[in-house]
Image (cartoon, rainbow, N blue to C red; front, side, top):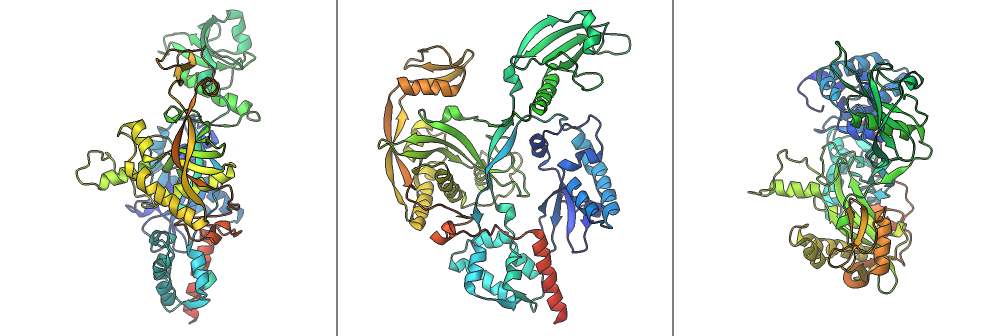
Length: 574
């Protein structure tokens, strides 16, 4: 909803900004909140899921404000803003004209699948520190523009300067206006390029794994007690029962001259009582099971927890422990990209990791794979005659040249957080042997990642070398079959009974198999002081990693607007 086709799409503010609506994060927010929408929903039922975006004067692209429609309205009502009625009328008009029909087709019950933030990344921009080092306290806008444009020659990444928006905001002011250093720093805003470290997860219970199919008829005398649909008329059977919690999904088979449906699906709790649902039940067992899973998660919320998902563990090297799939997500980036390997929006990089032991007994965080579907698609789109172009061109993405360096910086910090002695990763030979030419580009593991590691090691004074990492040999294979997780020998013959979980099978394979040592690149971090910050772009200097500064990646919109207003006031006074 950022198009300017009609003025009704935008809500003008007195400070020159224009508000708009965005549904790009609608699905993820609904899944994360586990919000069930009514079948016939009003525009205000959708308000907690729709983002408010704002476009500043001089900018072509809007940005997220960090507030939904409902949050924005609540804040204005708390301040008794005179714009509330006009805002509500504008929202209702835009919603009914552009959003009502497409949102009505969205699922009413969210999937139990979403991304959780694993940790707050201590990313810090370099631009503010370089401005402070200049020592310029007050200057005209023209002088500040010349100073900022000269910083890339001093080591600042040009992308950081461009994405900060400081140049655009300065150009919007009079060249004769005088700004202080604090006012210029307040014009820097890099929040839209700051990534999050997330993992795809489920909450609480996995219903599809916990339900078993059955066929148990419910006597007619129990219809009234259970409050079942079609009581006294239809034939009712329990068709699915949860293995551990006792909840049931029942089918009522009934037909009359008015209603053409013959099957009615309902949900019973662990006491056999009807769980409040739609007046006429569900049309399919899948819909009833989804609703039951949602109600189970709500009822047992205190005991439930986020459960990380591992979708590609079978592609990892055998013999490791603590396997995780880490996603570097640019959630506040206005473009929307759907990666090939995950359901999370705007995944810049995905990294598959595990903990392993070297021959000398040291523990390392091992990176099985580092890959960016987003930048791979952008590269294929820009390459003439490429046969891998997408039907819909992907949006532009940040860190076009720096995503491998960003990934390695984050993994050094993450490895220290996990208590590892070092950070190791797969090399080009291992990737070629595993994927036979169908894996990621060989240059990434042969040249790009080693160069990024070398730059980090040089900045922090770390040792970059190769080490022998223990990997389980091929005499023990773990795979999922219909009977469970099986451990097989050389010829694929199971050597024991199936296990209920992969962790149990892997542990048995490690105990009965033998290991080989592979020489892989590593950065040793066991002697490194605690990292309190990570440069957003580049590697900067050791002080930028080890400082106790709490400055984040840019000021908020309130500080930006305040600085612009002060600058305009100074211009008028002059």
